[in-house]
Length: 64
Image (cartoon, rainbow, N blue to C red):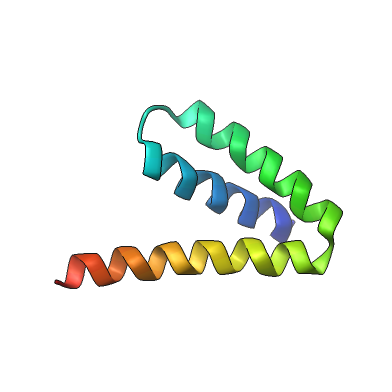
């Protein structure tokens, strides 16, 4: 379940970068969730780190 949530967050971050459509982000999130599942706990850590990095970048940019 946590892997699906992280996959959805990864898809959202990838879609925000492009900004074209929600379907592309959902598809990339599903692919990312599958890849993370194959990598096991390491994939979950890598996906979570990517999402955290993007969130920190966005917060730093909005603060000035």
